[in-house]
Length: 376
Image 1 (cartoon, rainbow, N blue to C red):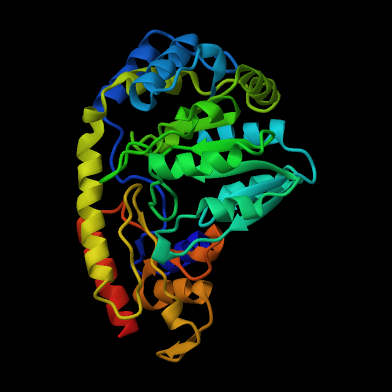
Image 2: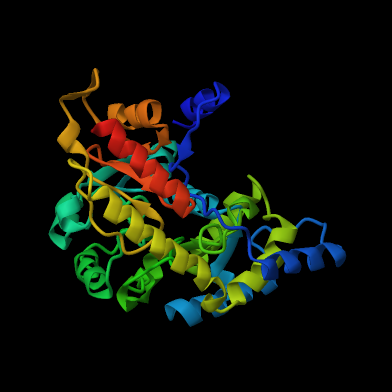
């Protein structure tokens, strides 16, 4: 989709991009100032493989403040983005033939990384009618003797779904029966929530030792290019991830780490203006999409995506173009409406497409206007 978008733009066509999972805000000035100060203080040497101690201590403060989680610096590993954090964990815990359970829809890299580890990923399907949430019964039905890890991502990419504490505790009741299964809780969109405050899975006492909590600065702090992610985990897992990372990238960027200390210690109120704007955009995009016949839309509680079910259009011919699946539909919108989205196939949800509202209100309104006209 990105390649096709670039191709069309090179031809001079006006394409509105609603495909990227990247805030359209600039990094807040107080974080940039911290980076400038670090440069002036001559932070230019290799950083410790698992991150500066001061940053790991700050992350521990953040975990306790925001998530009521007690981690020591020896349980924290700082990486070059949350994606590397996840890759480290999967590389050190998964063996060939292990099974990874992915409630769908799920972020595209989960399945790719499972394949890289020679593990097998198992999708647990959900639907828009259930707000893209799986049930404890579905989780238990998917578990086999080969199950090694289960992923939870709340707020979710691509659906914006948030699991409540009660829903997570019901999942934990199932997992308590299977003590050899690890839980990876991806909380990168934690601060971008509108109605429900996310709950950390590791906050369940029986799950703490085998839950790896993943977070980072890319989304909530508009720091995608700074590449800082981190985990909180059992000390032996953290040590294994450090050993793995030491042979791949070593420590994360020194200047970005120094700026990250300021970011993670800042009160959430410092970034609330971005969250408030995302909520306004969410309400706009949901309202406008619901005016288009054939779009089935729920209300995402977090992140900055909407994930409509567009299966109504499958098998139909629109202005001479046959739509067989979500891929066809996404490319139709790109070519006929000039709007870039992402097919749900990539997320294990072939009936949907993902639209990001990390774009200006004017772009969102124009994009959905074009989509409506292209489908009329």
